[in-house]
Length: 384
Image (cartoon, rainbow, N blue to C red; front, side, top):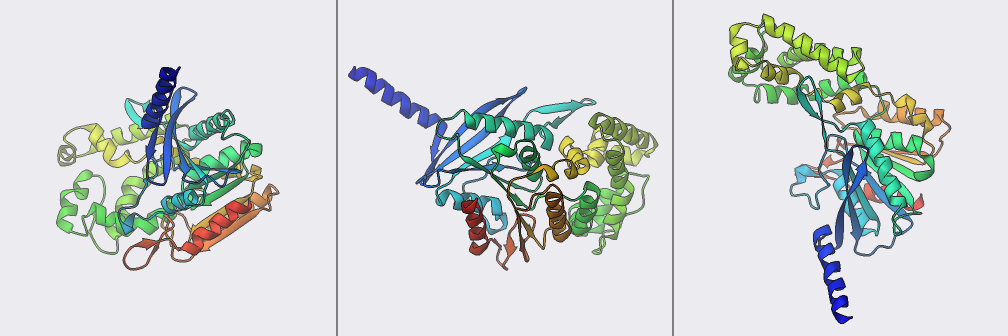
C-alpha cells in the first residue's frame, strides 16, 4: 500500500512538472482542447491566492497574435495594457485563462496562410466555454471576457450568440467602425512610419534601389519627409489591391482576382523590375499582396452591425486619444450606439488622454500605464 502511495505522489509531481511551470507567485497550466478540425491552446494561470473565485478572466488575444502573454516586460517600449492588467488581476486573486485559438494553415492558389481569423476563433472560444463547464473547479462561475484590438471581434461574436455564458466584456481599443474607415485612418496615421520603413529613414538612394525598382508601371517615388512619395506608392500599388478585397467578399474570389491582377501587371513589367524580383512572380506577388491575409480580409469586411446589437452583457470600453490604428471618438461612439440599438444600457467608456493603441502613454523615457487606470478596470470587474 505504501508503494502505491509513493507511486501516486510521484505521478502527481510528474504531471505538475510537465503541465505547470512555477513562476514565483503562481503556476501555469497549458492545455489543448479539440475544436472542429483542429486543436486550440489555452493557458490557465492560477494566482498565488485564489481569492476571487466567483469569476473567471478569459483573454481573447488578437487573431494575428499566436503567443501567450509574456510574464514580464523587458523594455519600457514594450509596455502594453494587456500584459500589465493580466499581472494585476492575478495579483488581485483572479484566475487568468488565455485563449489563443487555432494555428493551422489554409491554402489559396498554392499559397499557405495562417487560418486563424475572427470567425473561426469565435467558434474555438465557444468550445473553450464548453470545456470550462466540464471542469469542476471552473464551472458555474461568471465569465469576464477581455480582448484587445482585433480580438474584440472574437469576444463580440461569442457574447452575441452565448449571452447566458458571458457576464461582462472589457474591450481594449477594439474596432467597431467600418473596415474602409479604419483603413483610411491607419494609412494617414502611419504614412510617415511607412516612409521610414520603405525609404530607410528617408534616403533617396535607398528608395531608388528598392521601392522605385519594384515596378516599372508606377510613378517615381521621392523619399521626402512629408511622405508624398509613400502616399503615391500606396495610391498606385496598394489601393487597387484593397479595392479587390472590398469588391469580392469571398476569400477565394479575393485571392483569385489578386492573383489575376498582379499576373497581368507582371506581364507588363520591364526587365529591371522582374530582375529585382529575381524573375520570380511569387516574390513579386508577396511584395505587393503579402500583407493580405485571410484575417486581414475578414477584418476589413466584417460587419459589427450584425452582432453588436445582440450583446446583452455589461461592456467596458477603453480607448486612447493617441490611438494610431483606430480613431478614438468615432469608434467608441459607434460601439455605444450599436449597444443601445439592441437595448443594452449597461455600457461604460473610459477615454485615456495621450494613450496609444497598445493603451500605454509616453512619459519621455518609455510607455507607462497609470495605476489609476488599472484600478478603474479592476473596480468594474469586481462589480460585475
